[in-house]
Image (cartoon, rainbow, N blue to C red; front, side, top):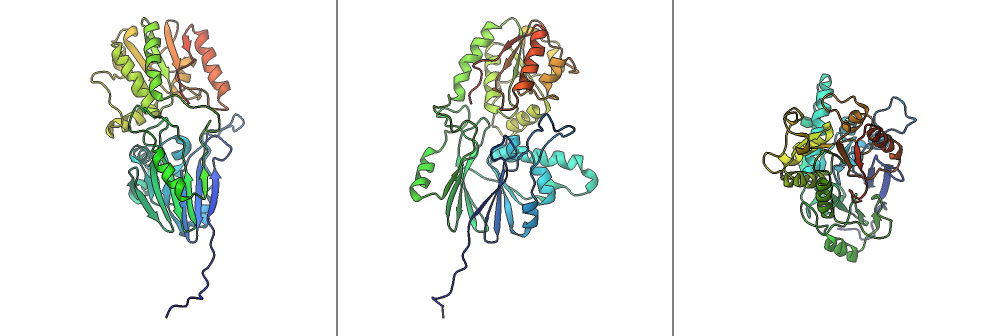
Amino acid sequence: MSNTNKEIPSSKLKIIPLGGLEQIGMNITAFEYGDSIIVVDCGLAFPQDDMLGIDLVIPDVTYIKDNYEKLKGFVITHGHEDHIGSIAYVLSQVPAPVYATRLTMGLIEHKLEEYDKDHAALGTRLMDTVRRKTVTFGQSINLGDFRIEFIRTNHSIVDAAALAIYSPVGCVVHTGDFKVDYTPVYGDAIDLQRFAEIGKKGVLALLCDSTNAERPGFTPSEKTLAPIFDDIFEENKNTRIFVATFASNVDRVRQIINTAYKFGRRVAVEGRSMVNIIDTAQRLECIDIPENTLATLDEMKDIPADRQVIITTGSQGESMAALSRMADGTHRKITIGAGDTVIFSSHPIPGNEKPVTRIINSLLQKGVNVVFQDVHVS
C-alpha cells in the first residue's frame, strides 16, 4: 500500500564552474543533481607571460575526484583546445564515458592516442579504458538523473553543438561557443527553431560564454571571406603566399584551399596541430579538397614560388608555432623573406596582442608583405 504522505527528499541542481568563467580558455563545468554529476567540456588554457616554465594550464578537478562515484560522463560541445585540450589528462585521473559529435570525437581520440604514446610506460591505455560514443544532432543521451540533447550550432569549427540539459527540476541550456551563420561553409545552419521550442517550454538558466556574444550587431557568414581571399590572391599573384589561421578552423582552411585551386596553386599545410586536424577532417569527410592540390613541404621545393600557398599555425603569436619559427628564421624547412606575402586570417585573442605584434614586426623587418585587415569573421 502506497504512503501518500511519504516525504520526498529535496534536491537542488548545482552548476559548478571548474574553469572558463571570466577567462579565456580552460572551459569545464560540472552539473550535479542527487547522485549524478556530468561534466561539460574539458579544456586547457595557455600560460600567461609570468608563468615561466609552464607549457599548459589544466583545470583543478579535485571536486570531481572527491565525488567520483557520482560521475556519469563528459559531454563535449566542440573540438577547440579550450574545450577539449585537457581531456586526456583529466580522464587519466577520473575515467568516465565521453559523448561528442563526429569531428569533436575524432579530435578527442587523437588526443587520447597521443597521451597513450607519451605515457606508454604506465601500461594503461586511455583508448582501451575510456568508453566513447559519437552523438548526432537532435539525439539525446541519458546519464543518471540527466538527459542531454545535442543541438546544432555554427562556430569556427565543424560539428559544434549546444546542449539542452534536462534535470528533474528543469532544463538548462548550455550554448557552447557559437555564431549564427545562415550560410555555413559546411553542414546546416544553427537550429534556431529548436532553441525556440525549448524556450517555449521553459528554461531554468541559459549558460552562454561565447566570445563577443554580448556585443551588439551580427557576425558575417564565414562564406563572405571567399571573395576577399580571391582579391588578395589576385593582388599578390606573383608572390608566394602564406596564410596563418587557427588550426581548428576547417571551414577557413577549406576556403583558402578552394581559392588556391582557383588560382592554380598547390597547398602545403604546416604546423602539427593543423596537420592533425585536417587529416582527421578528411578522414571523417568534413572537408573536401580538390585532387592534386595538397603537397608536402618537400614537394613544394620543385614548385615555383608564385604557385605555392602555405597554410600555417601561429596566427596568435605562439612562440613554438610554425609561423613564429619562420619569422625567427628557425624553421627547418621554410625560409621566409622579401617577396613573400603573409595573410593573418584571424584577430588576436584578448591577451595575445603583444606576441602577434612581435611576429608582424619580425616579418616586416624581413621585407615580407603582411596582410592583416578584413580576413576574419568573429
